Image (spheres, rainbow, N blue to C red):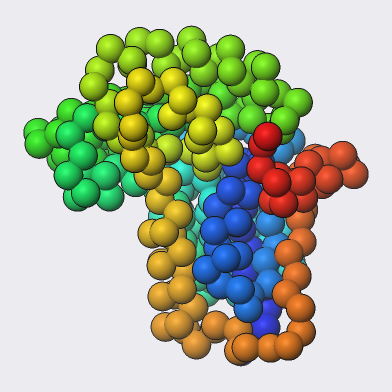
Length: 260
C-alpha cells in the first residue's frame, strides 16, 4: 500500500524543472516534493534518445529509493524521448510528463506561434507529429536553441551569456509576426521576460505547466494518493547528480527567486 503522505518526485536534466516544481507546489500545497536535477548530465536536449532513456531511468531509481508515490518528468526532452519506456519499466509508479504546449496555443486561436525547444525535443516524432497536424491551420516557427539550457544552468551568473546567445538565436525569428511563444523546455520560463522583450509586440506565453498540474492531480485522485490536509509543514527537498553545496544552494535560490 502506497503511503498518501509519501513525497512526489520531480526530475529534470538540470535546474529547468524547478520552474515546473514552483507551479506544482502552488497547485498542490499539501504535498511534499523531492526534486532531482541531473545537472551532471545536463542538458538532455543535445544527447541521443537512447542516452536520455538510460539517464532518466537511473534518476527514477534514485527517487524510488526515497519511496516517492509518483514521478513528474519536468523535462520536455525526457518526456518525448523516454516516457513510454519509463512507464513500461516502472508500471506500479504513476508517471506524468510535461510536453510543449503547442496544442494549447493552437486551441487558443494563436496564428503565429514561435516554439522554442532543445534540438532533440524538436526533432523527435512527437513534436514533428504535432507540427504536421497543426501546421495546416496556423503558422508555426520552430526554433531549436542549442546551448541555451546550458547557460540557464548557471543561474543569475549566466545572464550575460544568456542574453548574448538569446539575441543570436532569436534574430532570424523576429521577421515573423509572432503573437504567441511556446516554451518547450522547462529551463526557458526562467528567462521568459528576456524572451518576450525581444519580440516587438505583446505575445502570450505557453509553458504546459497547467496541463501537467492537472494530469498529476488527476492521477493522484484516481489512485487515492492525494495527501490529506495536515497541520504538519510541507517539505521540499532538493537532490542533484552534481551533489555539491553550491549546486543545491542554486536549486533553492531558483525555487525561491528565479533568475534575476
